[in-house]
Image 1 (cartoon, one colour):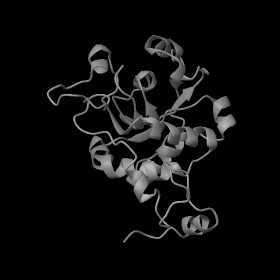
Image 2: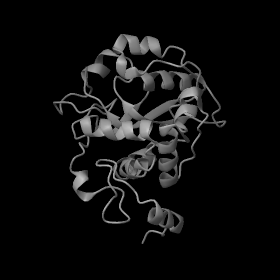
Image 3: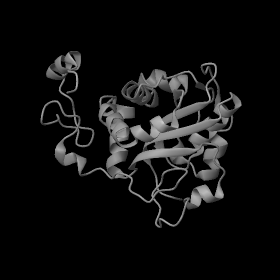
Length: 240
């Protein structure tokens, strides 16, 4: 039986948890999502690309078109959901409306689905994709860092929030095409402080679209001596 988190229970009594899909108070009490709302999510289904984790049409194919034509520095990314309208609204609520509690459900879902695979990869640390300090001050948090904290606690992996630094305030990626995204992220991420001896890193972010962000982060981690970088993202877009 799971150990009862009394602090969480008391907080929930005064501030009832809201569903990450519909936004209403979750029923029954104690759950992270409404049972009916789970059905509205679109989990990534096999077959998937062996590099980025996007759904692909044929199980005979190893990689998606994007990963066949673009170099990837990271080993593999594990994605939870397809980035459809439902996921888009939920992620926007987290980032722009402060719905941090939604990450409790999403992190639990990530660990249930990929926990065993992540443990086999044996990451030394979890590194959240950083946001620019000004954007973090504006929001009050970095959603990737909170997600990394949740996952780290559940899987027993230390989190290194300053493993990477974001020194360039970039334009929102959603407004840019592939070429513009790559240019936008040039020199945006620089080495931070990884624990000595770090060889394998689990890079955590909320959304993967073209892979430009993960690639830029992976390259910076390689400069710091990391040998293998795995990624885990809540949502992933379709092939371009």
